[in-house]
Image (tube, rainbow, N blue to C red; front, top):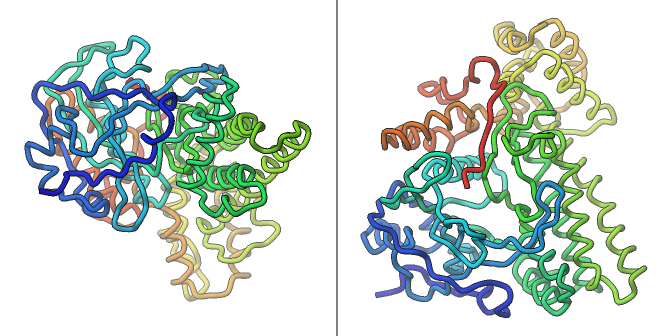
Length: 498
């Protein structure tokens, strides 16, 4: 019989100081909550075998599959601006890597599978709530078209974990292009381990930026690639109202994927100062701060890479600064391009950023819902006769405390639309494809978690997954899942759940 996972483990072939070898801790009574069958097929795996008792044992960490080389990766990181020289995978174990049907290599990692050498006296376990949150939100982000880690499976362990209270335990099987972080490079830089730094950079180039190997300065090309991917990723976050919640450097993937869904959340009422995370007491990682923090994190990466950028320190700093200078333009291009699509603009004019900025300012002043405003805006655009549907316009206006504030903004928007070629139907399609009807509304996520944790009821988890798999489609039977919470979500708090 073929192996359950056709592993080919490149990271495990790096020097031993890159990780600690550790096997998952067996659990009492694993039970499959959900397998992502479509993802399994994409990875070249057999979903029926993964759902079998043998497969569930592997997904729970109860059995190590053939070909696996379990390890916990070492990394450092800045946590809320404070540097910690050694963090590492404290509750996650990388089983190995598979090459999917598309030819891309991906990590298979278990989260919540027991203590590792980096657990720092933690139990290495995960509670059911955070596992379901990451499964749901990461798959929703994928459906929204945003680069992200994926969820292959969620299982309960039959055991309890102790946090503020006693909670049911669970394990998430996470799939990622890699788990190399900004903090991975910081780990070696902090130790003055240039040999390790170079080995990691060469591995990252081979895995994520193979064209960089042909550049005059491959390590500068690697840095350029990470900067570009992060600029585009954070811009995409902003266009759907996503707040990561804990953008520490150890939570920033060099692959340009959203990773580590802890206290993440989505905007309801638009306010750029929104920070839902209970541990982000000063709003460092607030919605509107995310581009600035991304650049701050990338600056830490550039600092770590200095010994590789040039043997001459002055030249190395110049290379790093030149690379970092590119972030602003790349972010602005991606962000304003995304806003233009949300406004139905297929071309670019000098005044477009101001037009979008004025709308966002008006939304903030009038406590308008971020997702609903943009979704309904598409229906309120002028039709084939050049006139908007009055009912659609009223649906947008009703989201504003002062509807006339929207009216004043909309006059300029409609004049701008008159400068666009193409018909009204095509414009509406552009806007529908850029403005989701459904996001993981925070109150719905909390209801789902409560049902699962308190009553072992996973029906709402399945329903949310089904709805969020088609975020840009009208789904009249599930219209309630598009509605914001009472009070616009103010006062909502998220927790890491670790």
